[in-house]
Image 1 (cartoon, protein in one colour):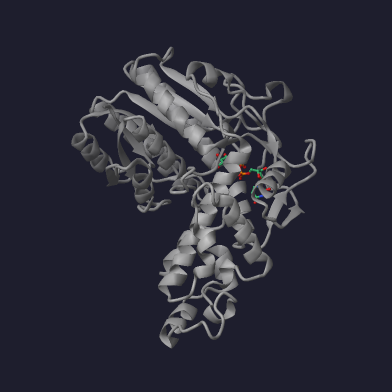
Image 2 (tube, rainbow, N blue to C red; image 1 turned 90 degrees about the vertical axis):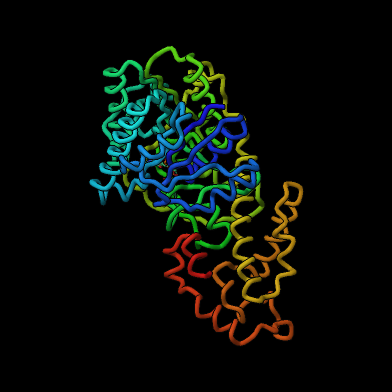
Length: 436
Ligand code: UD1
């Protein structure tokens, strides 16, 4: 079967796409520099698919190393290019980093593709290229005008689209598909892979789930005075597995020669706009978990409302976003519980009792509801607070007489406890690293 090179394949969308490609019988090779992801993601992919994808820890900017990958895998027939820096705020602070990273990596990749006779590329773009569409362009389709980018990150998406067009114009053998994502959310239904934001989450759903589980004190809803029905911003939230499936369709279309234009552009969204408050209330309703929140001022650079007209992708790719918002939210919560499970395994390693956590840790679909119930009971009785987990003596899960943990282990655990401030500023991933 044909091999697809997936750059950024250990990242959020890249890992879900790798799973879908492999499940459809494609061979894959992942290239990732692990700057914003973790090699453990390969374990998750292997657990789902049953095979471990080959992995090359390479930076896409490194031309000789990229040449090595194409040489070692002469069966590559197409590339899906996810690898990029994606934090909007960081891009404003460090524009040169973003221009170097996101632009040069595409240039290097296209050069290496040409040198190794690989002619098909799928590029990860974003609805950010449309800015705030005027009312007559809502829902937004692919013909809506591109607007001046609001951040260097957004600008790199626009410039990369232009680089692809210019190169396709010069090299008629290049076939490209540009996929403009709306707001990807959710995790694989197995909870083996999902989104692991670096540091304090900037995106809505990771912040919601981290607040729900007690990692963050409260969600800040950025603005309720927009010109929308409930005053909060509207976006088109698309389930990441649906999004991943669209990539498989895009690859199939290109390599089977069905593309009608040399550069094709598709909006990937559901066609449904939802407000921040609607998302929040759906999350609370579906999971039964309360999420404390506060309405605060608008976030600079936020767009009031944007959602997709995905009909072109529906027709041409024979693809449609199918999973309901409720199931998507369930997948996110299940993933967050899986992360909590990892925290609890650490407790176990530290010699703490954890029988009472067993129900929570049963993560099969059937037990999810009871897990949530158990989790809520823990929260209500104030016994489950991830912040407090490392403090052995402060958790009611271990009563004095039950706690036969050795003094050494206690000291070890307490010594690794993080202050609240450190905690707020750290990502779950950093926190695991510090704990282990
Ligand atoms: C942002 C970027 C987009 C990028 C995407 C990456 C902008 C304008 N857009 O999309 O280019 O591709 O991230 O995933 O920066 N919200 C809160 N509280 C929070 C977090 C978010 O109320 O703590 C609100 C935001 O104001 C927004 C909505 O939730 O209305 C979605 O925000 P977010 O998840 O950050 O995505 P976008 O801003 O749409």
